[in-house]
Length: 432
Image 1 (spheres, rainbow, N blue to C red):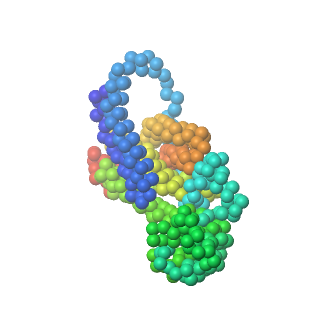
Image 2 (cartoon, rainbow, N blue to C red):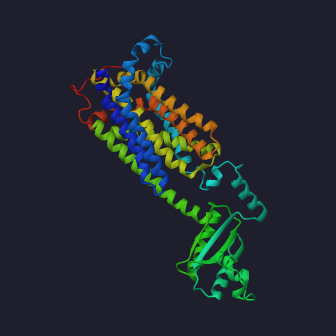
Image 3 (spheres, rainbow, N blue to C red):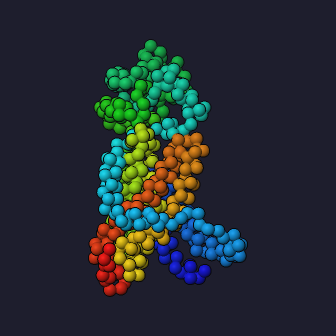
């Protein structure tokens, strides 16, 4: 057990660092949802590593007799035939992968995304059903709340309301002046009615839109309305579901870029330090990122619309959780090269010996997430879990089929750009 802990400690901690770093990259999001998810998942990985190198060895030693008594053959086979096939047909495999990858790379940027939280919730909830009924009966698809300074004259407020009414898609505008009019004296208006439209030095105008939140039509409508409001009150603002959704779209686009760039850079740096290489991190990150793009490109071809948070979360989770497979495969390939095997022999042995670990980890990851997608009533959770489970399978396939071919082909480059790639003097390649 002491030997097992010593031999696995560095690989376990090294792999966990990339996973933790990938999850913590979500803390760069402006949406605090990313920080919540990232910190919790990073803590989970850290606690899992601590338990693996402390509690697990104690449990194994305590119950070793029972473990030995019930030992059975391994159900997941070593992929010996697959390893031979991958090494023998490495060039056609890479060409086929590139041909397959290109359309998914293009498609992942065109996948439809929605930003409204209502769409991700069960539609039979009382609150959702009531909101949908209001939209159907009163054509209240979205309501905009315009807040302006109460020092605006009645004429300006009336003109503002009229201009807002002329905006495409606005079918109703309500304001205190328009609703009450000048015929009713101020003293006859109840305070609770007046407080709906006037409070805290501001006045509110309600505008009902026939466009759906998050749609291009409504975003254009809001831009036009903001220009009109600013003309009368430079400090005026528009709020409501539509305005907040428009802000969410802008924030999410920035968050997506920040999280992707941060996670790739952090994982790249950690792999570069672990392998002391400039080329290995490029190879491994490229392999996983290609799997992520394929995963996010599939919804385009199936006509699926994804929640806005999906592309941000999936990219980070799939990179952080499955880059370990690539590290394991590359580490074993390097060990076999140092043992005196040729690049082709090392790749074949690496696939054969690592396949059980990768398949066990990947299939467990798939089962844990896919099962949740089957029982979840919340579309957001279901879609996320389906993408994560599918991403585990795609990453597995890329690491077992594509990465070994890349390692064989790029091995001369790896040797020149990695400090002490081979611990022994350079090995002369055997004839195939």
